[in-house]
Image 1 (cartoon, rainbow, N blue to C red):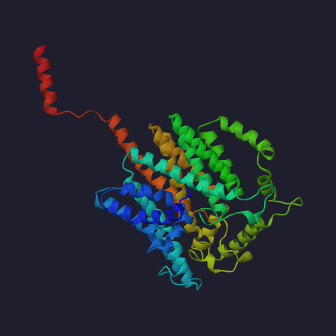
Image 2: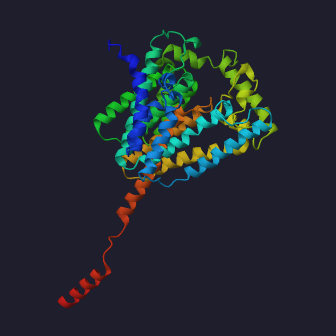
Image 3: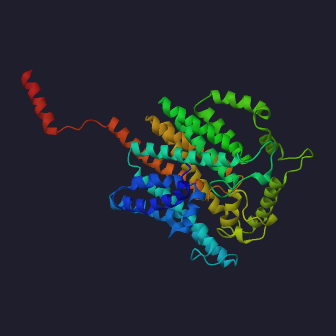
Length: 449
């Protein structure tokens, strides 16, 4: 604004956290959750908080304050299988870390100074976010606000990604020009976030009747896809195509025709740098590019590790401690990572969580009469689909920057299922009358006849 106030934005944002903790404990945990949502993905903003007291932990503190404020003031969780699944999964992952210690790979997971414990602790914020959202999303209005705030958070990420990409010339693709992005973990993670929540908004818009909402929502989706183009993430591109195909099958059949035309003409439509990025996956001789070859080498190496301990793996968060292809610390595939670290048991738990995410979305989409709940359900189906696809190209699951907002929406979905059930009961339940009143009316009818 030309006043130098931009330098104070991180400080003001940081000061909002202790204020919202007090607001939550005083009886307004819903407001605190709304404040929290935009900061879940915006890691680069949160990194500024480290300069201030407890700045590295403000996210954790506020999440706990939302849960505490909700429980103190009598909020109750809607029924869901996901609570027990998360509890079992979290305990299993912690026990799995001790397996890594027993194998001499990792230190004992006792405190945040241990990298393996820090990974587990950060990941356990995700189910806490789910609990917080499920507790405070008490009615239809709060669910609607959560969706709107999620869209606002997406706008902030869009803006940051677009501004970064516009600072460079993209006449030709150059790997060195790709930025870390507002999520602070690289363009591939930014792409996963963009496609996941753009498709969520697209799903919600299928049941939105107000023209103003549709126009704004389509503008957000367009900005997200523009930002996605310049992340140059092939996994993000594939996730978008798969999700649009699914949207066409489930709701909007004309998208199938548009998608078919695009697949036939994409080389003439997309920017040249994007085309170069896609075509460089294989050379003219059929050889994989360096990035793709690294993944193949890692997966071959990971398979050798998996067969040594297929049931329970080597231990959660152990892969980062080993020496691997090109000194990489991740398998670049979530499912391979869980097979190596937690074995078949861990992967099955991940599959159960994904199945429950799909199931929750599908039941809202197919079983509801309220357009808001149906849109929420379809959005969850599309976002989960994107998550499934992008995690084939890297770990997009263990980062709260992506998983956090997703599980806020799933918490709202769990509440919507509860509210939908109440609405159904209200519609079909017979009107209860006093038996004595019924007898009196029968006697009166008999006398009059």
